[in-house]
Length: 406
Image (tube, rainbow, N blue to C red; front, side, top):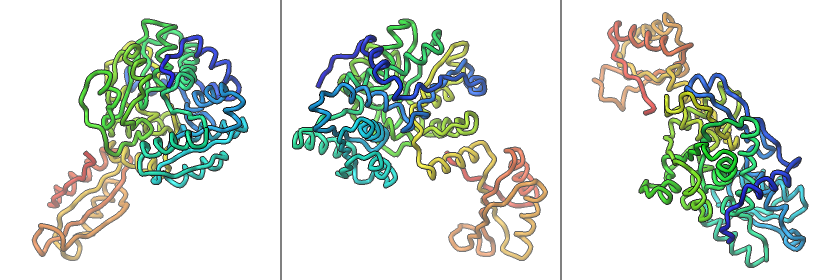
C-alpha cells in the first residue's frame, strides 16, 4: 500500500483530470441555517453528484490513472454504499470490468443499483470486513486492481478537489467541518485547505457510536458499534494513511449524537429542500449541537451524500415533528363507560388537534378493572395547541401522560 500523502499539486492535477466527468457542485450560503447556528454557513452540495455522493471524485481519479493492462483486467472494490456506486458508474463509462463485493445484508435496492451500472456483484459475509477480506482474495485470484474506499493517495487527492472548489467560491472561510468515516474525505480536504490557508480550522465529525478515528488519533477510548443513521461513516477501523494525515492536519475531532444527526437531516429537507443521508448531515449536526461556538465565523460544511432509504427518511421526518411538538402520543386514563371517549374527543375538537389513531387498552394495564387506557396519536398546527389540549383534558379530570422519544 502506498502511504505517501498526496500534495496540493496532486490535488490540482486530480481536479484537471476529473474535470467534465464529475459535477462541480454549488457552494451556497444558507441564510436560514446561518441564523439558526449563529454563524455564516456555507454548504457544499455533493449530494447533487450523479450517484448522489462525493465518492465519484476519488474513484474517478484512481481509475483514470490505471495502466492499459490494469483496465483490461478490471478492478474490484468492497462496499455496501456510495463507493460501490461511484466505482461501478465510472467503470461503466470508461469500459472497465468491475466487481463489487457486498455483505449479504446489503439492501436489495443497493445491489440492484450497482448491477445497473454494469458491475458484477458478489455477496459475501455479514459485515463490511467480511466483504473486504473476500475482495482482497478475489483481487489476488483474478489479478484485479483493488480500489480502496479511502486509504489510497489517488482517492484522497480526488476528495481534496472539494476544498479547492469551496475555497475558490469562499476564499475567506474560517472553519471547515467535515464528516469522518475512514478518513479519505477530510484528509484530502485538509491537505488542500491548509496549503491554501494555513490558518483555517479543520474540524472532523464522527457519529457518537463510531469514534474510531478519534480513538486512534486523540487516544480516546470510546466504544464502537450500534445502529446509526450515519452508516456511511460507521467505520470500525480507519485508514493507516488517513489517520497520519488527520493527526497532522486536522485540529479537532468531535462526536455527534443520533438525535442531532436526525435533526440535521430533517432541517435540510425543510429548509434547503435537499435530501441528505445521515453521514452527509453530520457536519451540520455538530453546528446545530454547538450554539454560539462559531459566532462571527464563516463556516463551510459538506453535504457529502444523499443516498438515504425513503422509508427511513420518512421516519426521521415524522420523529422531527414529534420532537418539535406537532405530533404527540397521549396516554389518557378514563373510566370505561359510555360517553368517556366522546368527552375526550370533544377536547381535541375544541383545541383544533387532529386525531390520527386511537387504541383502547383494557387488559394489559395497571389501571383498575373499571378503567381503560386510551392511547391517541394526534397532530396539530403547532406545539402550543397540543399543550393546551393536555391542560384541558387534565382540567376535565383525565390523567394524561405524553410519550417521549428520549
